[in-house]
Length: 114
Length: 110
Image (cartoon, rainbow over all chains, first blue to last red; front, side, top):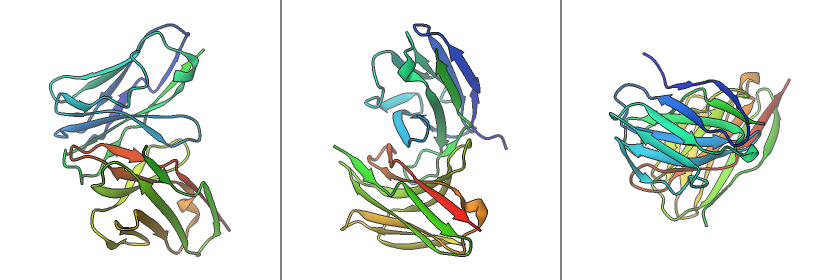
């Protein structure tokens, strides 16, 4: 079956522009996670969804970051007025929804802000 | 604050055994997971411990001691393909929020 997909795979943008990153989770997975990974670093938790609800948004770095999930499926992460420090790989993962469940990661979106 | 500590790098030869330790200090604890990530790839799940003790999956084993806030991943019979970064992650709430460590780069040499 299909895994987690993310689009675009690469995004180059100019400082100050808005970007939208998309994640398609595995069908049937109720939990969806967004992480950020800078070069050579660990995974920084951003936000997660159970269904369409986001119980914890505390990981979002600033109010320029927002995320939504509709229909319990696709999620979009929006970064407004991008800054150079936003450059990173943004990873999405999904799981069946139990906290013990394996997270399946997508290939990531590499964002470069010039 | 919350923290997960693991060594930044470990080097070993093919066929050897490597142990990657992870100590954690988090506001909540529901389980400890391990993920592998090859350069340029996405993290993939290796193991999960919710209770104390050792879990074995092929060449990889994972251990947890909740009283010590400590766990480790044991890689046996190292192969070149095991060269990757390994992350420990703690599930910190009942909804499934994860906190990841900074990762350990394992370098396997011939």
